[in-house]
Image (cartoon, rainbow, N blue to C red; front, side, top):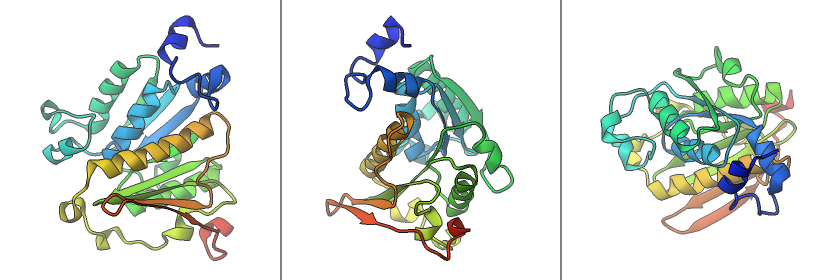
Length: 245
């Protein structure tokens, strides 16, 4: 049950028909991991903490760089050179002291992904490499944990939600070599696309926390802000994919 303070703090959230007091209780008891504390991670971790999730594990191996400050709102110039997870933890704890924040300063791969996903309700993917995404996708399928994928670059981005028996990440993006992808140094990245994709990921996370079906199962949301193109592409699992095993 929520107390009087919480009832006031979340008084603009609880009245939503998809939330209510029961949904708010579910959110306060939810446990999630956000992988990546960059652009998408800053948006999704901040919003999850603000809405009162009970437990949040944040994972990143990087330090704050001056180039991050244009779009990663967790950080300030005084934070340059410091581990992202440490700065993010302080920010999120100040934002909402009721949320338990755990940090893991490491790069996700097949050797540690089970630790990343241990005892959580869903995976929020805010990483920037397909090697990491593939590890998360496979572990999510293995443990039967919902996995919310998001990616941005330049002025476009996409996201989808993955659960066992539905289309997985590798049904759509298989065999991608990170070395062949252009970096943000080349393409640039617009803050608006980060906010749009991050918000869609939070919408899916909220539905998962209140025990409602995600809207982006077997669907890929795509957005291009230069052309104001918003599409939802229908997907289906591929028989040759690892998820069909």
